[in-house]
Image (cartoon, rainbow, N blue to C red; front, top):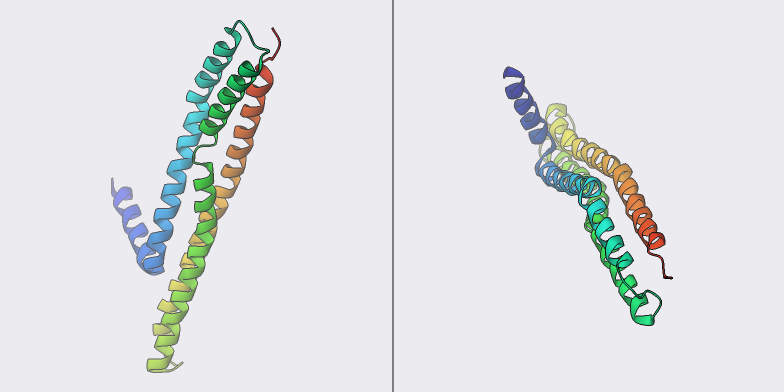
Length: 175
């Protein structure tokens, strides 16, 4: 139980080291990971059921060659594609937002350094160190968040495209 309190204290110290921008980065990364986990859970459970239901509905149709049947098939594929790609654009946006927020942290931290230099001159290294850490910690956190999301969003996007393609190929047009 002591390790939990030590971990919470370490996280709190890290968050205070990075300044207010680090909180925004933490919220962004948390949201990104919630959405990534939701997509992984969808791919492992609901997607297979949905694909099977669409496939069974299509195969149970008596007529599959008319224009109306082709439109119904396209509608089924479109709904499946929409379900598999849900949230992926938002995840990609959050991944792209992480380094931008890190850059904002760099700018605000450097502003703090320049304020210290204006007030006390360049001789007060201890006062400037807080601004430097406030400039570098959000940059690092933004990059780590973006890197962690880039790999998974690439895998999720490819999986969604592949699954839609599999469904499209499995829905035969002839009877």
